[in-house]
Length: 157
Image 1 (cartoon, one colour):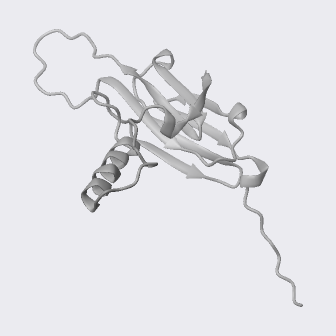
Image 2: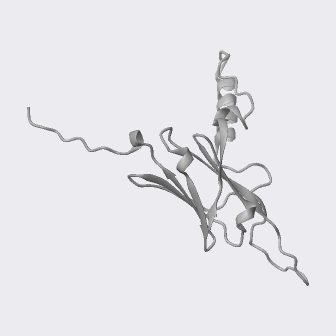
Image 3: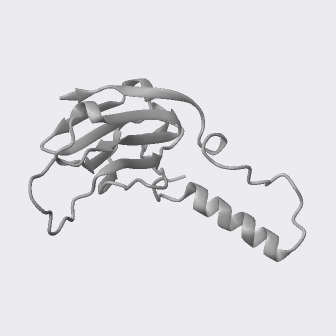
């Protein structure tokens, strides 16, 4: 099953983060420490408040980057894959099932989920594909020609 991939304009650091004031001079070490702390909190891999992050692997081959995210029981229409400027975002929602009786224990995650990964600059964003099979979402990001490794032979002078 193939999922649509949405392209979103804009840079990663321009959108969801508060002003980090990197263009202003630093008065003391404490202020620099506070700015760095805000920056690390903003760009960390932790999901937004109230959401969870699915387990995922990011692997690189000679031709593509592959993200495999575990999303068992989540329907295709509840998953959104977006590609912005150097950012891959997988978001969605897992609704809690209706149950009869008393739930004694639950370890399943429900609610909003979010996975974000920074991509290298040289990818073919228009050729990204996403498929959902057996509870695993696989997003394939083709490399641009410049990003592919190239072996250089060393000759004797």
